[in-house]
Image: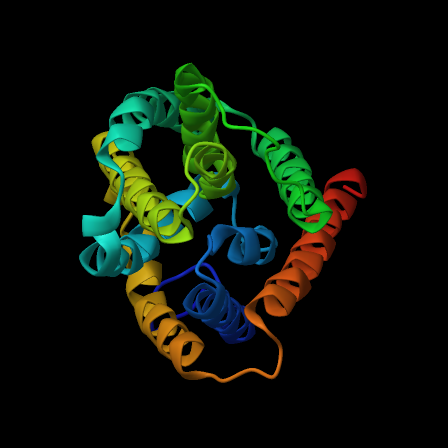
Length: 253
């Protein structure tokens, strides 16, 4: 246990975790999508998923709040009114499952979820026609469950919004608002369940807060030779390998 921070990690493990979280938020700063897909597979090597998701919720909240300040006014309120109630229901279900499910089962589900997301993202699939408004309940509920269980249901919302809206700016703003609300919902659910009574978890979040800030700052200032589309594709390949690594760990234990 680290004597300095009273955490169940040695100095080498803390360094790996800190660098991994920094990288996850560099990706967030450049590509603008969920950090959990990058950070969770790495963190799963050191701690259970039932602690990873609340930890990332604390870190994500600040970044999500900044997104809301920048783009919240462009969000489409009609779509938000349809999907937010379903998202809240799904978040409650996902938080319950996260807290009562067996750790090994959650590890398997995390690996499947990450691999499925990467496969979807790399496929380049886009909805061929406009979705019906009534599908907001299906997408919102599933997205809420995935957000609470794995810290990243944003791609579920993205599929729905891409099938409802034509303007990319509106899609991005509405997506950012949904992610912000989803993060806040998770934060409140975990706080109500007493998860944040774990002082070690709060200390770790405090230790990783500078990693989040540095990562976001670097992501916004780094100029890459790759286009945004090429970079996102590269990241999705890395996400795919991360998910496979989690599955290998599950089946080898």
